[in-house]
Image 1: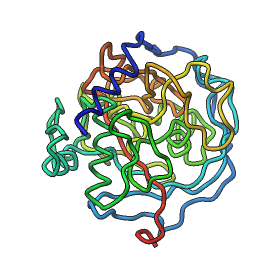
Image 2: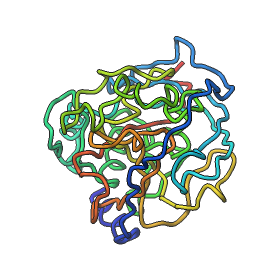
Image 3: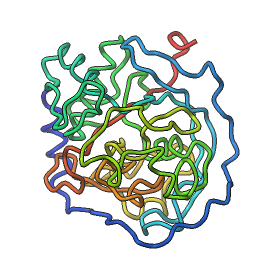
Length: 302
C-alpha cells in the first residue's frame, strides 16, 4: 500500500500549473430552470458502518458545464449517470484521524486549521485515494484503487473519489443556475464559506445551508478532489453516459472552490486542474480536501 503515492507521482509527473483565475464577468440571472429527474426520498440517507452519513444521489440526466464560465467548462453537454451514494459532509479531521489509527499507511491528520469537525485539508490526491481504500477495508468492502498504479476499479463496492460528472450533478441537485441554489452570487454566503466570510481559514462542516439533496459545503470551505484526470478540452469528447475523465493527464480535477475562493471560483461548473502531489498548487494546500462516493450495495443498504 505504501507504493500508492510513489507510483502515482511517477505516472503523472510534474504538470504545468493550471490556475483558473476569477472572472469578473456578470453572471446571468437565474431563470429557475432545472434538470428533470428524480428527487431523493426521505429514506435515502444512510449512516455507514464507519458512522459517516451518506446521501443517495439518484440516477438521472443533467446538463454539465456552463456557457457563462471559463473555456474549459464548454461545451455544455447532456450527461446520464447511474445512482450513487455521496458523503453528506466533507471528510472531517475526526474521521480521518479515526481511520489513520487503524492503518500504518495512512498518515495522521495533516491539516493546518485544526478542529475535529473541520474538513481535513493538506490532502494530496494519492492520500485521498488511500483514505478511500482504508475506509473500504475497515467496512469489509472491496477497495476501488489499485495500490500499484492508482487506477480505479469502478465495479468495486468500496469508496472512491467522485467523477467530475458525479460531483457536478450532486452539487447542482437539479439546478441549471451557476450554483446549486441559483445564479445570484449574493446568496452564496448562506450556502458557503468563501473569501468574503471565511476569515481566511476553513470552517466546521455543515454550518451553512445544504443543497436540495441534503449535501453540505458543496460550494466553498475546501476544494474537493475528483477521481478524474484533468483535460481542458475533455468536454468536447467525453462520453454521454457515466463519463470518467481522460485516460491520461498530469493533473487531477478539483471542484467546489474553497475558503479562499471568489464567488466565481465556487460555481457548480468551475473546474481546476491540480498537480496531485502539490508540486505547484493552484489552491493553497490548506484549502484542499475530499469527500467520497460509492455504489449501492443491496446487502448493506436496503
